[in-house]
Image 1 (cartoon, rainbow, N blue to C red):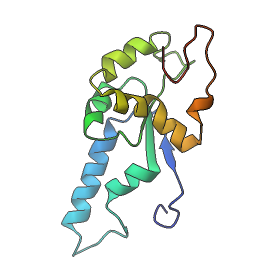
Image 2 (cartoon, one colour; image 1 turned 90 degrees about the vertical axis):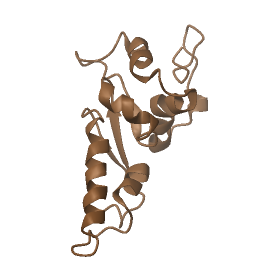
Image 3 (cartoon, one colour; image 1 turned 90 degrees about the horizontal axis):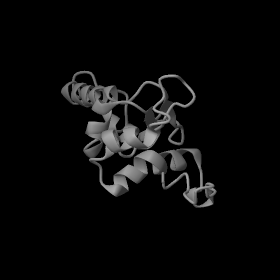
Image 4 (cartoon, helix red, strand yellow; image 1 turned 180 degrees about the vertical axis):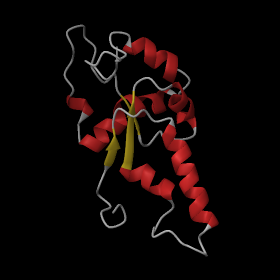
Length: 140
């Protein structure tokens, strides 16, 4: 379906993301291993679909967050899962600092804002200023 519908976007929500690098690693492995004997009906390697069409949200996933240096910066979207009881709110900023503090500012911005803005067609420049003078985008 992803080959036939290149504009289709899939988002897995409330499943965290730590499992995604492993899944795509396995798909890559088996597609390569059986390329000649039993080729997968794909036009691209599985990881190419992940970069452009498959996204995942996470809010409390240390394993997934640790992989964002090398995997997932194009497809991961941090959330806080408010108002669910297992949400990181009201400690979301501390959770971001703890789980994502190892990322460069550019990758952090992409994961906490940019990817969601891109997939949902939001113009982050139009995000209103909050009462304390910060913007939702800046997280301050």
